[in-house]
Image (tube, rainbow, N blue to C red):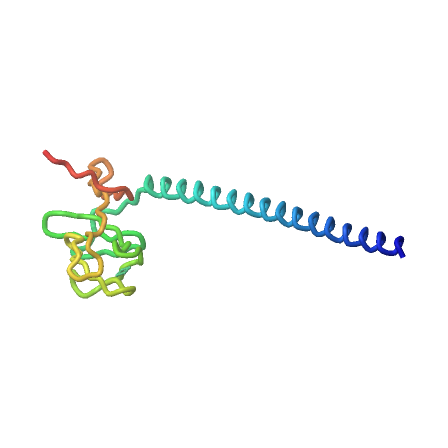
Length: 158
Ligand code: FES
């Protein structure tokens, strides 16, 4: 009888030990998974940062025959008036959707309906409150081309 009891006790003990081992193994796997996930997020963050940096150094060239009004490209649009050519981002300043061509000088975001004045990039209707980002757009005399750089235009104060 006594022997039987101790045997039961031993098997119970082994059961708990096994359980403990299982828990610690689970904890270990959880930690490894956490580490791997953390690593993936970190790599993604670094890569996307790198992508943005590379993108901001990208430049696009256009001949001097840019038509009057809006010329729409994927990441930006050009607007030519009598005395200027300006480039603005097509990313809506509300939540980042791509804004589409509208009527005349009006651009419309199909996500939540914001409208922008294409000539100035200013919002005419919310929910967007910030103007569209203006990109650097300069005429390169040497090549007779307009150069658009996907980086924020540095506003000169002088
Ligand atoms: S993302 Fe354009 S209106 Fe919301």
